[in-house]
Amino acid sequence: GIQVEQSPPDLILQEGANSTLRCNFSDSVNNLQWFHQNPWGQLINLFYIPSGTKQNGRLSATTVATERYSLLYISSSQTTDSGVYFCAVGQAGTALIFGKGTTLSVSS
Amino acid sequence: GAGVSQSPSNKVTEKGKDVELRCDPISGHTALYWYRQSLGQGLEFLIYFQGNSAPDKSGLPSDRFSAERTGGSVSTLTIQRTQQEDSAVYLCASSLGGVAYEQYFGPGTRLTVT
Image 1 (cartoon, rainbow over the protein chains, first blue to last red):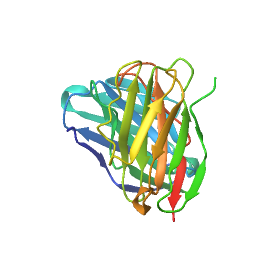
Image 2 (image 1 turned 180 degrees about the vertical axis):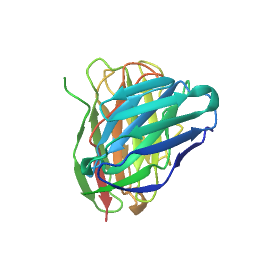
Image 3 (image 1 turned 30 degrees about the vertical axis):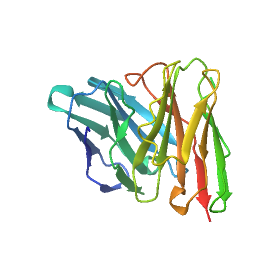
Image 4 (image 1 turned 135 degrees about the vertical axis):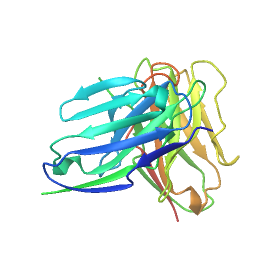
């Protein structure tokens, strides 16, 4: 089956710093989503981005489907950005396959 | 509008008991998914319902796990004869259509088997 790798596994930032999270996948996909899991365990949808570039406030994402990777950019990080960021991909006829996540800690 | 809801939010049960977990998808969503998140494990797929098609059960870890979806809406995940390794957060998601559509997750049910 398709493999999803996220890097880095852990990231520690000072408030105000920028960061880039990466997601590599091993096959073509027709769904790619980025989620933020908050401290209460809720998965918050950040982006639905099987290809192209999107921006939402301080967050943006780019997926280069032909090269099988996606990047999540967080600018001017805040303590509330802390948590686990998951990339998940899907192919026709399958459910989402999740990466192991990047744990982000932002300190003030 | 209302998101995906799940109940109960927490469930503690004794080993060997049966449990039922409920999921109410977003209204109008034809696809419904169950996933599990265990300590030290990632999120793993369990079962997928799409419209009136036969469900994809390929992720169910054992025959103690089953799920049904009534009237194309509410779904119940049943775990029979629970084991300690079943302790996890069970997450439900729904989408407008198949896998190519954006999935939205509920808050999860935390199951603890003692």
